[in-house]
Length: 247
Ligand code: C2E
Ligand code: MG
Ligand code: MG
Image (cartoon, rainbow, N blue to C red; front, side):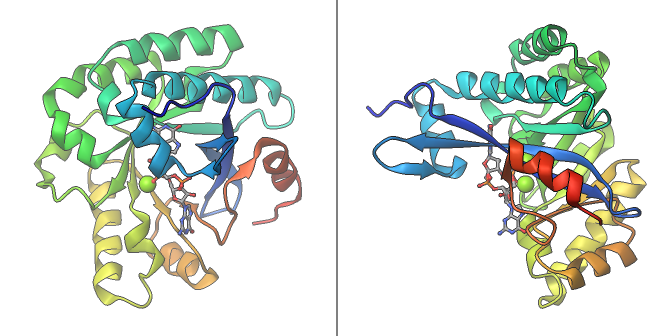
């Protein structure tokens, strides 16, 4: 069976802006894997591979530790930056993840408030009760919890009643074409209203044009992420981007 070889992981950062001001306030940490034979492999492929080879814990550890190291190294350049890390469905029912966040933030001297853990809506549906304890522990420790890929879970909305979360991320498949497809527009509009009514902040990902960002501003979406602002960037380029960007 193919294994992910050590040393091939790299972290890219995609900026997330506060729509009201245009300021870069956060970034999503997105892992990349460079295979010496194949080249760059997208996470959609290697995350599945890592799951099947039992290496998903290692990938997650890399993502959390690298994020903490970056925040620590940039404590002067970007003292307010927040980072979001994707957590695999298979890991959200196990308290090891809480211990990993605890030890990484302690080692790097990073305030837990500066980390958000993203969990997909599908994972929350599949693991409902079993994940609540872990998510609550994550929030009690001080990190934020975000519901990723919202709208794709074919879910009843009942789970939102008592979900231990802070943020809702509308899936990019709805945002990307929301100005061409009236159905997508309505889903985005309603997702924003649902988030507000449950006191969750709301992020739109997959913003590829100025017109889409303008529409989301009118809909009072809180945060923006997408290629129109920037693609995911290697850490050094992200730092440069933050210095130069005027939202
Ligand atoms: P996600 O968490 O929904 O991340 C957002 C994805 O949307 C990223 O793809 C990003 O590059 C892409 N994206 C952002 N803006 C735009 C846009 O304007 N247009 C389009 N077409 N795409 C946009 P990426 O980096 O390929 O990651 C895919 C998925 O892999 C992520 O989806 C996330 O679920 C997963 N992933 C990435 N890194 C990790 C990791 O370290 N651990 C785990 N467990 N999953 C990861
Ligand atoms: Mg995500
Ligand atoms: Mg997403």
